[in-house]
Image 1 (cartoon, each protein chain N blue to C red):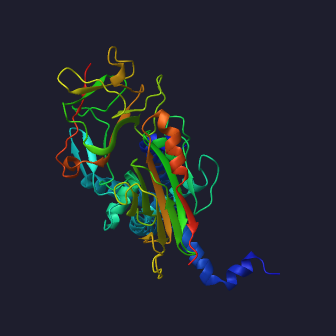
Image 2 (cartoon, rainbow over the protein chains, first blue to last red):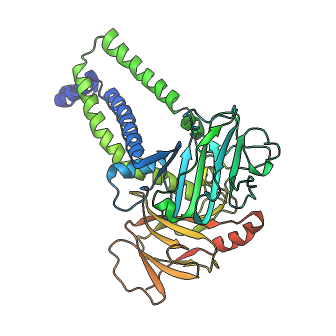
Amino acid sequence: MINANHWKTYNKPMSQVLAFLSNAHIVQAIIIGCVFAFLTASIIMNAVFKRMTTTVNGWSTTTKCGKPGNSLLERAASARTLPAINLVEEAAYWTTTRDSEGHALDGRHNYSLVFPSGQLPPNDAFWSLTLTDVAGYMVNNPIDRYSLGDRSGLVPNADGSITIYIQTTAASGHEANWLPSPSGKFKLMLRAYLPGRAILEGDYLVPPVRRVD
Amino acid sequence: MNRFILKNGRLVTFVILAILAWFVYRQFIVKGSPFLPFAIMTGVIWVIGTFVFLYIWPRMTYSAYKRALLQKAPGGPIPVNTFYAIPKLASASASDGSLLSTGTDSILYVNGWLELSDGPLVLHVPDFMGRYYSLQFTDPSTGTNFAYVGKRTTGTRAGDFLVSAPGWQGSVPQGMRLIASTNRSVMVVGRVFVENDGDMQAAYELAKQVQVIPFDA
């Protein structure tokens, strides 16, 4: 019979290795190292993505995701933040979680987004403005409206500009231009499919989201 | 669970770090175990692990997409080398794992996961009659969109495309266009424009006709 003690005697090098592993808390070191590595990689990816992004009027956009020839860091940052999205030639995306003064968008306040006359996102397919929670999920609302866009029958103002009202309760007199917001913090995403030249060349700027109360 | 972690990332991180700090405090300050070997080992794993995470991040992301596309397809699991047209638009009631939970409600998605190990595949697209659509071909190891079929790149007429694995040598039959993949696995995300609710059925009928069959040379 070979009991545990025999095994230890005959496998001294092995038991020394095991002893070292346990004294050095190797398993714990691996777990902690992996957690730190995960967090460090996340911080790096966020920083790289920030560098790939341009932000104007609070709206962030990037034109690099999914492009052939991206570096290892750019590929990781893209996969983390905007996986599976289109090349910019196919669709341009802008997101914001901030109003024009840099405060987080929150259902406790009312906001307006005014596109000056002729300044809707130029495109050859469609555009839409979608509201989600901060994690990117659509939120239930009484009129089942999750987005507004070129087919929403938006009513222009007298000067031809278009105002979108972003608030939890119906915008009286402007129901067609009302994008319902949830009670908590939220995010807006603007899409333009087959973006026009002004977008691709970086000349088109999305107007800021202004708090109105 | 997904939503909880996404929404409370900082809290989850803080809790994990607090547990680890408690362990280090117990083991090395209260019990007085030797700290140096542990610290060196942690540092080595930390540095190597950071590079590994950055390198495999696209792969991890797209293997999650593979699961969402195949196992969690809204109509039940689908096999590889098939396309599934999702008969619904994105909405707040879509389930967590579904790709519909974060999309746009102007688009019908028609998705597939291609495996080219057993030879090339033939992709057929119907005549979209001017309607906006696109099929995005993504390399799941890098996230690179290496090819598109659709209004912008190939027009909206009906067509057949031969999708081949890297290194495939053969001749492309007349009337087909070649899509040379950079990987033996390919994620295809198809987007078909929906004008309004009344247009859903027409868009869905077209999306369903996007199909893929094995290529018999």
